[in-house]
Amino acid sequence: MNGDATGRKAADRLRRRRTALRHTVLIGWGAIIMFPIYWMIQTSFKDSGEWVTWPPNWLPQDPTLKNYEQIFAFDVQQAGVAREATEQPFNIWGSLVDSLLICTISSLIALFMGTFLAYAISRFNVGGSTFRHMVLMVRMIPPIVIAIPLLMYYAVMVPFATETLLGSRISLFDTRTGVSALYTTVTLPFVIWMMLSFIDEVPYTLEHAARLMGAGRIYTLRKVVLPLVASGMVVTFLFVFILSWGEFLLALTLTHPDVSTLPVLLNKFQSASEGRLYGPQAAIGTVITIPVVIMGVLIQKHLVKGFSFGMMRR
Amino acid sequence: MRPPNGPFARLGAWLSRERVFRWIPFVLVEGTFILVIIIPFLLTIYISFLRWRANRPFEQAYLSGFRNYEAVLSDTGFWAALGRTFYFAGFAVVFELVIGFVLAMLVHRVVRGRRIYITVFLIPMMVVPVVVGYNFSMIYIDHGPLNQLLSPLTTLLGMEPRIRWLSDPLAAQWAIILADVWQWTSLTFLIFLSGFSALPPQLISAARVMGASRWQIFWWVEFPLLKPAIVIAVVVRSMEALKLFDPVVLLTFGGPGTSTQTVAYYLWEQVWQFNKFAFGAAASILLLILFSALIFTGIWLMMRERTRLDRERAS
Image (tube, rainbow over the protein chains, first blue to last red):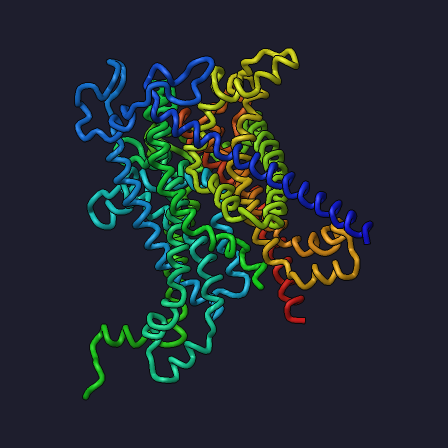
């Protein structure tokens, strides 16, 4: 009796120790994850003298909003915004608008086309049984391999073709349309793949019943299928939006002076030629990161469920 | 009432016929792929046979056979960059898999605070890669916080406390690998976590009732069931790691020297700095052939797992 109790106590202690160890490891990794983000956010509140010091300041000695004022200034020539004579005046409004427009439009078009194709694959097995895997191939091609052809295509071929066919030169290079078309294409595989996993779960009998009662095909799709996968569509949209929002190589390649997405803007200040502006960079980084992290947290529950590539569904 | 007539009505009727209707989305999507990806590729194949640099007009270009391909294949920089890409990808993927697996296993067993852990651990995946590169460039500064954190260790080992993370060749290579691990362990964690949460609990409690130890349960019950998740994680992460580009640009510009040039960065530099378009086109085609082999292997692996799973589920 007594021995049993001590045995249980020992087992209890062992379990508690194991739990404590587990939490220590997990909190340690959490700290590693939060550290770079913390460093960026606190740098964004530092003034130029504090950006690089030894030993580094772990919190801004003299917190300031100057960095944010600088990147959000409407009038870039405004006195006091560019703090030094060598600094080029700039703000993020242009890039913000470009990024928002490109990502929203391309994600919406990809969502629309991808959802219908996913429906067709799921219901009619369009393209054969291996098609859903082949779609992923487009995603796996390294972007640099697409970037070089696309640059020549956008800058040379499309103007040439439109000039001979339509009589006016239309260049896709350095335009929002060009980048949006590209983002639509490269995110389509993800849309198809994610929507497939949602649509596969809608029982076919529901549609069948609606069709028997005389509903048209489009009507059935709109009133029966789409409401059931609506939350899935929101998740897919946000996921694809996050992907486009962070895309760098293709944007860097296909835009130069006129259009620039936020990652390209941030990169501009990384090269020595424009001077490293650590503070404003940190502010831009914070501004880019916060919305997507919020979106990510919103869809996270679905990601855990849905990121099994349809292999581990119960 | 007469049925509607006219060309549009007839078109609508044709489109809504069963055989046509199901192919509409297919044609739309494939059309996009052809317009945006296939045609540029055909163009690239043509350009790869030209003798042309972008600083000269396109009209002066002339066909030169396989010269560009020979130039690429005999270019030591290209092979070195390719080897380096595999070296970075190999180390990064191994670390990501191991850390992601352990974290998923621990989180799966945790009862309290589970959701907070998941939320925090998934954040790096959402952060824009360029921002990750920027963050690490701040942390790696010679006078930066990382060197300060490491200074007790480095003084203990009698090393120079200011490790030159971005200007020493070896340190710069590992700086890039670490940044990649920081960001993409979240993805392997996610894949493994969904693998763990899909494990059938009856099977595990049955094994426990039969007197299996924790380790036995893990090795003989859980691990085999997680195999599809492992295959997915390996395939997805390897493909992504071979694309490595953003942190290289943000952290080192391929330097010091050429010690951190990945193949993506190398080609980018050849085309955009040296205007070697035809060279870049030939290299793209060669890379595509190489990567296609890898991609087909990856997809074949995933499909095999899937059919195996379907068969098990059916029986």
